[in-house]
Length: 222
Image (cartoon, rainbow, N blue to C red; front, side):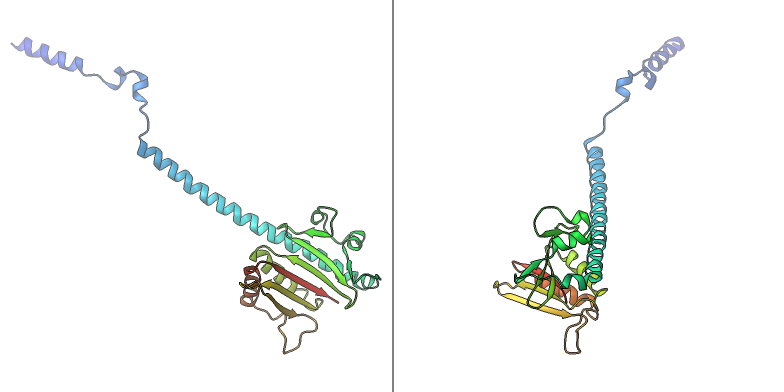
């Protein structure tokens, strides 16, 4: 009887398989669906964060590049102002790009074609011309976004005593023309002045301009 019990116990122990008795492919069990969804969710969150960080970095780069481009342009216009104003023409308007090209005051990356336009880091069109009647030179920006609009205005504040004015020309919901001017070196106490405009004023002007079908911002020199 004792031998029988011993034999039964031996058979029971021998029939129990350990991990070493299992084939290797059975030990590498697959991931569950819940685990896979969790991994995908983590990857998705990380991707969104990376894209947001990249977009923010690119916006900062474009704004800094725009400031650099326009600072070089404005500084050159101021330096050669007297020479350029002596340019005579029988036309009412003179497009100034050919003159600025010869003087090498426009960054090369802003010149993209053979038209009278140049382009900033946001690829916004810029037209520079002189009104031969008033002897005023205009930098005309065809604006497309509020960030570049605000950035251009903040840049202009550094040139407030060289600029005659900045103009915002847009349309309202009824497609009626709306204009607002801020003045620089000729600013009086009754006028809106470039150098004293706060961020709220700048944002409102840019935002109002962008609400319509067109938004054109002018820098005016004389």
